[in-house]
Image (cartoon, rainbow, N blue to C red; front, side):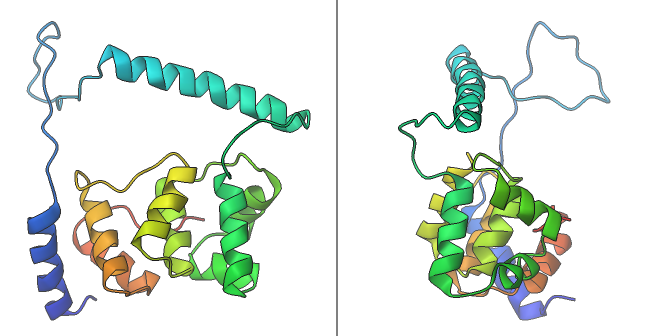
Length: 184
């Protein structure tokens, strides 16, 4: 159960920061009353997405063959560095993030492992990262915080207010019908 005062503060924060996405319908597709509209993707966005998929395959192959590539620090590398800098044990962090030992083991053993966005956010909360560090960690996994997503606005509120209790954050996310942080 979430505190009523916190809930009201959160509602006001969401109202001031959340930008609902506007979806456009493709004029060539038949309209159906039970199907929700989907966002349209530009050709440029599709090209970037396609090249990112190919680049990821190339990076994975190079990682497997120990071929050095000029890449930024990966999500896995940054997470492990942040854990070391925090002075906490790995188990403390993945438990605080509400993440299973198996998922953490995958992150530790694969330098190119990409977790879900909610798992990445859970680690940011568990490590009590500030907003800039959280954005940087998410970027390493290919994500961003956006005011187009209510989940992002809610998590941003908690981080800005230095409230790092994952159970409290998940209670708020549940209250607003959002996906919870962490993952088994």
